[in-house]
Length: 122
Image (cartoon, rainbow, N blue to C red; front, side, top):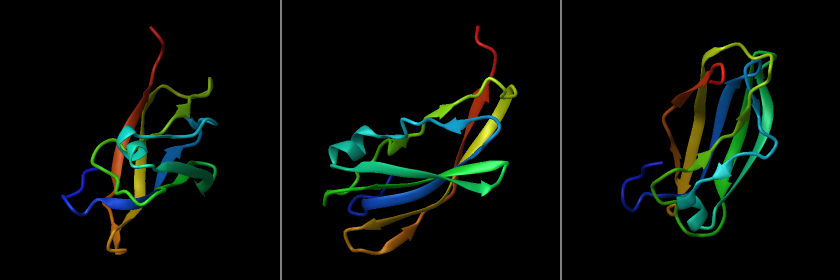
C-alpha cells in the first residue's frame, strides 16, 4: 500500500479473486505485512465463491488499533497448488478495495492484479 502523507488508512478491506482449479487458499490464511503489523493491525479473511466453480475469492479486512497503516506490504496471500493444477500463468486480482482514514471517510482503491506461475519443479 502506498498512501500520501497524512492520508494513511486506519483500516482496509479487499477481495482477492483466484482460479479455483489452479489454486486454493492456504488454511493458514494470509499474513499481515510488517508495516501493518507494527501499527497493531491484524488480517481476517473469509473464502467465498465468486463465480462457482471457476473463481473463488478471499474477502479480507486489515484492521485493529488506532494507528494508521504505514506504506509498505499490506499482506501476503498464501495459496496451495493442487497436484491436478495445469501448468501456466494465472491471474490473482484484488478488487473492491476500500479504506477508512482518521477522518472516517471511505476511499475506494484501484483494482490490482498479480500472476501466479505454476510449473514443474526443477
